[in-house]
Image 1 (cartoon, rainbow, N blue to C red):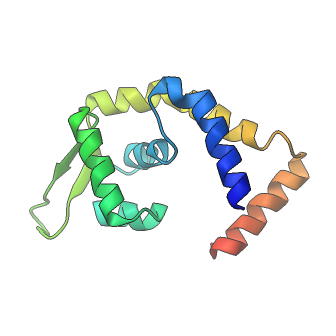
Image 2 (tube, one colour):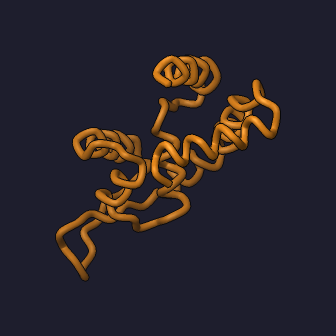
Length: 127
């Protein structure tokens, strides 16, 4: 599995580095796009990103003007994350390239094999 991950990351960099993305970053931005106001800890748990790494990534997105963090009045223990207008534009301009890349990763398999791989990975991950 590690070799498949390395191969996928290399393809990712070759295909999407011109879009200013690294592996994992678009997944974070896409979830923020789909679930505005998600808590930072919930986002980290959902994507299985360690909290320190998630904090660093969100700080980078803030510095780039893509994300804002706010403390909700209802529960001041956590941070809610939202894309800025610039963040929305960033995601919308790159989503086609990202999803085309994701689809192309499965092009080496026929549709039945691709579905079988997805099913097995979900089972392996406990989904």
